[in-house]
Image (tube, rainbow, N blue to C red; front, side, top):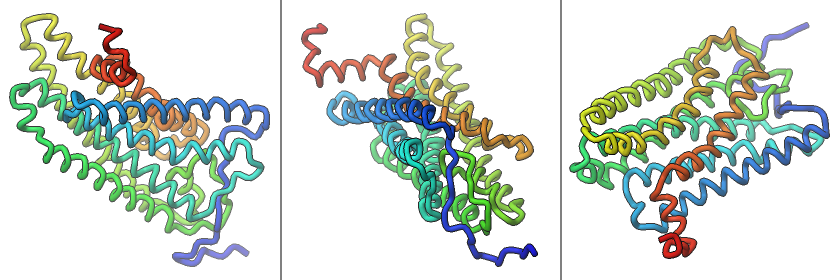
Amino acid sequence: MWMPPVENQTWVSEFILLGFSRDPTSNRILFIVFLLLYLSSVLGNGLIVSLICLDKRLHTPMYFFLCILSLLDMGYVTTTVPQMLVHLLAHSQTISFAGCWLQMYMFSALALTESILFVVMAYDRYIAICYPLRYTVILNWGLCSRLSAGTGACGFFFSLIHTFFTMRLPYCGPNVINHYVCDGLSVRSLACMDTHLIEIVDLVISVFLAVAPLSLISASYIGIAQAILKIKSTKGRCKAFSTCASHLTVVSFFYGPASYIYMRPNSNYSPEQDKQISLFYNVFTALLNPVVYSLRNKDINGAFLKVMGWSSVAQ
C-alpha cells in the first residue's frame, strides 16, 4: 500500500542522469564533440582574461566586466560539462544527492550572476556613449567593484533560495533525471508531493532576474539609440554602434533560450527539448562569447598581437 512521504525526509540518496544517448558509439562521438567544445570555451575565455590582465590599455570598466563575464563562462561550463563527459563513457550515470545539490546551486548561481552582469555591461555602454567625457568619473573603480560584487551576491543568494526549496522536497522514487545536469525543473518533476509553491517561488525569481534585467537592458539601449541618432557623421554612428553589437549578440544568445525554458508554462515542459536548448545557452554561448568579443574588437586583437610579440610585425 502506498504511504505518503514523511515530511522533510529524502528517500532518494542518488540520482541517475540520462544524458543524451544510450548508444555507446553515439556517446563516444558526443564525448569528442563536447570535449572539443569545452576545451575551446575554457581556452578562449581564459585567453581573454589573460589579455585583459596583461595589457594595461585594457584596464577599463568595459574590459573589467568582460573579464568577469569570461570567468563566469569558464565556471559555468566547468560545473556541468566535465561530469557530462565522464557519464558519456562510464557505465554508471549516477550522481549523489549532495553532488546534485551542489551542481544545481553552482549552475544556477553562475547563470543568475551572468544574467545580472549583462545589465551592468549595458549600463557601461550607456555611460560610454551618452556621457563619454564623464565615463571614467561615473564608472570609477569603486563603483565597478561594488557593481561586480553586487551581481555575484544577488546571483548566489537567489540560487540558494531556488536550490533550497527544490532539494528539500521529498524524493521517494523514481530517481532518473531526464537531463545531462541537475537542472531544477527536471529534478523537481521527480518530487513525490505537490510542487506548486516552489513553482511560484521560481516564477518570482525568474521575473526578478530575467524580465527585470531585460527591461533595464532595453531601457539602456533606447537611451543609446537616441544618443547615436544625434551623431552627425555616419562613421561616428557606426563606431558607436559597433561597441554595442557584441554585447547585444551575447545577450540574445543567453536570454533567448533561457527565457523559453524558465518563463513558459509548466504544461509545455518537454525534457528532450529542454536538454537541447539548455545545451545551447550553457555550452555554446560560453564558446561564442570570446569569439564575438575578439573578432570584432581591435583592442583585444591588438593585445593578443602584443603578447605574442607580433605587434611590430603587424605595423
